[in-house]
Image (cartoon, rainbow, N blue to C red; front, side, top):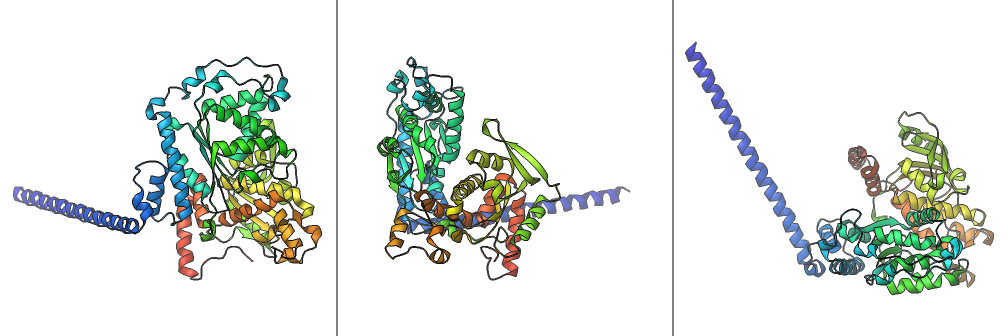
Length: 514
């Protein structure tokens, strides 16, 4: 038995040695392959940067410009001279903020408040709540003692030129001591009004709100700065005046130049001081570009229905996405103690008619509550917008903004393609051009009677953004962002469907079902 045992042990030892040699060889092969891949990537990066003076000139190892350079080298961003100029300005602001805030030395325990917060507040006046909104008390010693804010950046331009993407590079790469807050303008103003109600019993609630925000935030990044509400317009000057006096730096994106904000609005003369101060506190930067990057995305089928059977198709898709969950009525909490009724909800999906969501007195707060409760929304019966449904058009624009900001998957049935929905909306300039015989519209709008045309600068400017977002929300890139934010398990399914589509269609996907 001993010889047999010896040979078995020796055979086992030889087999183990052979396995170890094979494993070592596999590791060496993998290491070599990794090195080759790294060399290839490195070589590609060198090739990309070697012929690009902008990338060669970038020396910063941190901040938004370093992240932008990395994205360019990885092929995530295209070369765009306007974006290069903008990211350079954001980097300059980043460096100035670092210098002013003293790096890590400015970190504080707790909520990170600065020594400025310990300064004594001025005695309140007795002007009352309403006068506090528009008149105001004397500035506190805290505000007077604050160091001047770093001059911010106000980026404006057409849709899809990269404003939000570049601002997000600043937000994502900001150190914690920047106390940076990034939010959508809609969300910010809703929070301001909530805080005003909280301080309603104080003599000057707006000053208390501004001081509270200034204690929490030193750099405020606002996306889609767009003023249409008279209540917002009336308080912005005092609110931001106080914030700037307390040392806050504003970075904002918008489709409009500051001089065009709240154009044609009620009591706009009371809003003009805010515009003047905004241009003092922020560098106004035009990002106009000939390229709409959202339209470069590959679009996904089955989200936007315009065929005669569109209502049936939408409902079938809704039930499919409900994934066997019972469809029933639900309610979600909205700000200020209200509730929004969801007439048809199944799992993480909700189905509304256009009338239920846009022909009722709902606003951004309702839509935000919906976006927080359900990650997929189906909307039935979106009409072509005319003078008869002008208010509904405003609500639809707000709805799309909120859904886009929250990366909600959006399905809808509509009377026409996205750009056709808004063909009756004109700015004053477009209306004057049409009256002079050089109509700037075509297709349906050209054949429609003048009674259907809406001359409204706010809607006229907002339509391009809304059409662009409706288009992007059908794209594979947007669906991936939706999956990452709400349903990571869908990422693999998206990759599989892409492979299947590439192997079976050969002709590319269509933007919508017609």
